Image 1 (cartoon, rainbow, N blue to C red):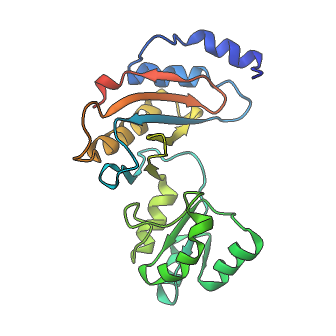
Image 2 (image 1 turned 90 degrees about the horizontal axis):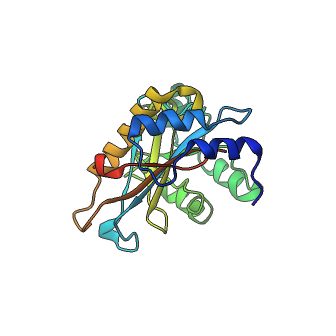
Length: 230
């Protein structure tokens, strides 16, 4: 795989054998983000669970203290007064069957998060096949199936992110932009790890946080000392 000069220079700053403390890792991730755009910083957290078992699922949502630095487009499935409430809260798209048809017919996905009132889930369920694989299906656990659409929209716009295991038992989450600086990234990262530790399933045995890596969009991975996190 071809790597540019900036990446190679960044790699030299990272000791691949070292497990960094959180503050040190965040300082390093900002120093290794050298692209011409404001890179997103992501955390990749491998857990000691087996996502194939229902009692070992780890999923939830958290509002990051400093947001994600990204403007998020929210689509809300609601009708009547709840639809008006969603519009007033600042949702980008609000509708019911009309939006289902637009998504199905036009393969339209110009949104980042989907919220639905419980009475709309019968309609939204028709989109399970297309929303599910993209991680866009509303869920009560993530707070995206709710009657309080104002709260849901406000939190998402303020930087609420959803975390969930992939098939390899890893959680991938954005924790901000490189321009945030080390302190804000540390705050966001600490909040995310705290939520994941709190969500530890009772069925999980042995070491829960197996490995934690942070990286900017174009930068190298930096290992965080997971022993000091849990």
